[in-house]
Image (cartoon, rainbow, N blue to C red):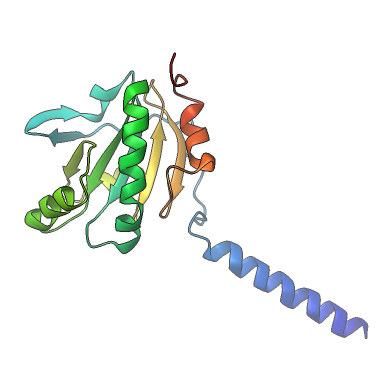
Length: 175
């Protein structure tokens, strides 16, 4: 009897461990990135050369995505809504696309009425500096350029669970 109980507990523990390791937010051996300076990189937005550091003083949601990524497509409408909300309060969504086809990238921006700055990373080098290997993945960066939070997987960026992290870094509406 004791053997069956211990066996059942062992099986339950193994299933629980597998569930934790299968979660997209779990990364084996990855230390928290919260508090680290966001790696700077060069980009071009609307024909203008700039750097991530040019956004200092703003809260930035840095989002790695691609038009061929179904979960990325799924979260686009909520990123557009988020941009409308935070742009008035000193924040911005900054998209970095991993698309291979510039015309597919441009078509996606137009079809989805993307209202936030985006950059097509043709070299695919920027995600590696952040340790990103799956899309979508986002980094919440505070006004000083420090990473406040890393978010793996598609999100509804209009849900209170997501906006609360941004609200903590941004002035409230109407102030």
